[in-house]
Length: 338
Ligand SMILES: C=CC1=C(C)c2cc3[nH]c(cc4nc(cc5[nH]c(cc1n2)c(C)c5CCC(=O)O)C(CCC(=O)O)=C4C)c(C)c3C=C
Ligand SMILES: [Fe+2]
Ligand SMILES: [Fe+2]
Image 1 (cartoon, rainbow, N blue to C red):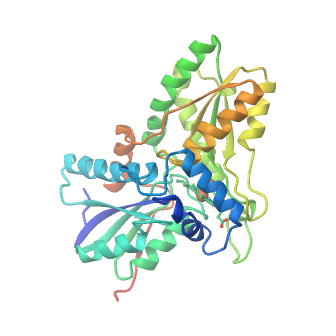
Image 2 (image 1 turned 45 degrees about the horizontal axis):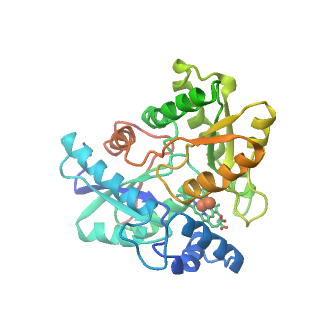
Image 3 (image 1 turned 60 degrees about the horizontal axis):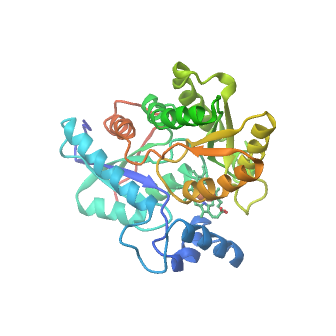
């Protein structure tokens, strides 16, 4: 139970995604903080979003990222209720599209919320993702108290949730191939410059993101050890390198698939461990682009289902929301009243 004077609420922070193809340029403008991307990049992203079902007009369902995030918020509110905390509401704020973080925090203020427990739906802390969520929350919440949960990459229930999704598809892949199939865990790549120790402005410590991402993968792999996944049976790569900002961190999925083929394997099971629900980098980058790359290499590719409405994920979020799990990098920020 969240015990604070005043009214407390949970704010789930997510990336955001456009609702229709015509919003792509404006959306990308938000993602890059106003830096224009070439027209070919806008069109390529429209193509990818079209491939995963986005249209010219709003569909009957919201796009996957928005839909699953709102479902996760609803399930978390119900889980908190079951834990005896029926007063705590769960809100959703997105960094790059509606409902924007600023809009949601304004709504929370109108609803009388004074304490915000902000949880990023990106479990591994990073400057380019979580750092920007933090900035957006702090900019909108003057006078409110904010507990910002920066990273929960090592939460045991997060690893368990991923393991529960991985185990059935890994077992299936091994059965269909008649041999052990390696697992390729992935997380989103970031530009190399964003994880460097120094830069402008000077950053005093390295970004922990790559280490946290590999740590989550390791914890998931450890959970599958009991069913036979060995230390040599899994790989790790950074996926979806962007087009801008110089080099992005690797190894890339493309190079890793080649290495897996060269090691004599016939297939691979991919599991992205940095994303908590379906969106374009899973439904297009993995299911369409990497599947095609794997086919070219003569590898069969399986993917673990995304966490989406996983009960275990919701339990992890409930533990964080109720203070039963203290994540690394938590910061309570009390700003002066306006
Ligand atoms: C840890 C870092 C990042 C996570 C996690 C992440 C998730 C994520 N990204 C998109 C969609 C897009 N991201 C784009 C660019 C971009 N993404 C990151 C980092 C993370 N993204 C960076 C550093 C950048 C570059 C920003 C810049 O200023 O150029 C883009 C733009 C096109 C591109 O460069 O690929 C899109 C679109 C989603 C949907 C998502 C998780 C839900
Ligand atoms: Fe991104
Ligand atoms: Fe991306």
